[in-house]
Image (cartoon, helix red, strand yellow):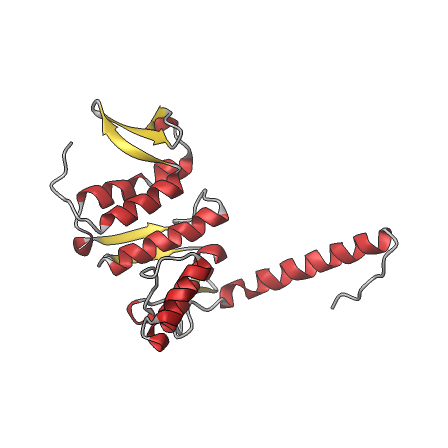
Length: 212
């Protein structure tokens, strides 16, 4: 159906969503279909889980004024490759800057790291007043100048298990979202990788490094 909602700035949002989906969702012949970037057409029910779960975003971007939207998103990174998770963070950031009020839950360090990068970009933008140094940085990193996130409009909360209850702790967003809840997993991953690498090196005749 035709949409009464037309906003030029949503072109970048729709383009980003198309990159995440590797295609787009359309309403054709009284049904929703998924059209891949190669031109193949599938009924939405036959599309990948990641495509089906992101369908509401396609509807929102094409039909609803973003500054009138309140959105709750549970794990937007679900079924997405880590690089696509970063792109998803970009989309959420753009929607936030367009006026969407949203609550997002996530277990993805890839998504949070990208959000923190966008916060740092905003801080650099403010320090440089968006001048030539900032412009050159964006060119060097191949990132749009307007893709950044003001930490003053974002809040982060960590849910901790305390017996049978969960405690909600507000996080300091000065330097982005803290990684407190990921530290143990990161340390364990690094320790495991170092231990395996050291053992392989020893078995292949190399020197064995001590693992703390």
